Image: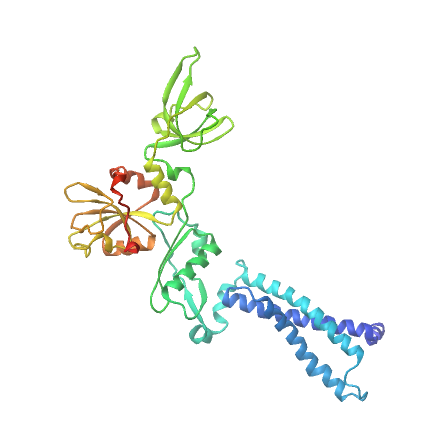
Length: 411
C-alpha cells in the first residue's frame, strides 16, 4: 500500500489518474445519454451533440472542483502551467472517448436481441402522453396481405404489440408512411398495409413479402425445366425456341415450343407445357432453334405485377353495392376490364362507364386501396400466380384505340 501511495503522490502519475478518471466519466455519461436517445427516438445520437455532452460534463467537474481548489489553496496562484496542461489533456481524452461511448450506446440501444423494447415505454410516461413524441403500439394480430408471400412467423411475433415513437406534428398519412418505412427497413418486409385512426391508434396491420422464384411468372398449366442443350449464341431470356430431340438412328423429332428463361454453358432453363415437360429426359441432349419474336402479354403482365407493389382483385358488384351508378373513373384503383351481366367483357373501359349490379370488375391497385374496396363490396384478392387465369378471359384490345387504364390520379 505504501508503494501505491507513493506512486499516486507523484505528480505525473496523479495527472494520468485524473485524466483517466475524467475520460471514464465522459464515456459513461455519453454512453447513457446515447443509449436513452436511441431507445426512445430510435435514431442515432448526433455526432456534434456527443462532444457537447462529453466535454460538458468534464468542464463542469473542472470548473466546480479543480478551479475551486486552486482558489482556496494557500499557493495564491489560481492557475498553474501543470493544471492547464492537465485540463487540456483531460478535454482531449474526453473528446476521444465520447465518440466511443456514442458507438457503444447506439449499438446496445439498437440491438434487437436485448429486451429494450419492453423497457423503452417506461422511461417517461409524461413524454408518451404530452411530450414531443407520438407513441404507436402495433396490434397483437398481424395479418397477411393477399397476393404477397407470408412473412415469417418469428417476425410477426416480434411485431405483435411492438411500441414505436415518432415525432409530433405528423399527419395520418405521414405517420402511416413512417411506420411502413421503419418496418420494411428494420425487419426485411416487402410491403406494409397499415391503417390508423385520428388518434394514431393502429386499426389494421398486414405485412407481406414480395413473391420470389420463377414459379411466380409461369402461366397456368406450365412448368420450368432445366435440360442439356446449347442454345444459339444470340438467344436471350424470353425468346421462343423449338425443342428438337435426336434419336439413336439420327432422326430429329420436334417435341414442341418453349420459352427460354436462362442458360449457363450447356444447361438451359425452359418454360413449357406440363405435358411436354414430363417428356424431358435430363440425361439426353436437345437442340434448340430460336423462332421469331412473339409477344407474351400474359407473362409480361404477371412479371409487371411481381415487380410493383400493386396486386389484382376481382370485384363482384352485388345488388346492395354502393358502387352502383358510379363511374369507373371515381374509383381509387385501375380497372383493366369489366364483365357485364350478359357475359361480355369490355377491355380498358372508359372512365365514364357506369357500374351496374352484377358487373365484375378486374381491378389493379395497392393492397390498402383494394382492402378498402373489399370492405365495401364482395371482393376477392387474387394472388399474383393466379392473375394469368383471369387475364386469359380478357380479350386483347387494339392498340389503335389509344386507350390506357385510367385512375383517379389521372383526373
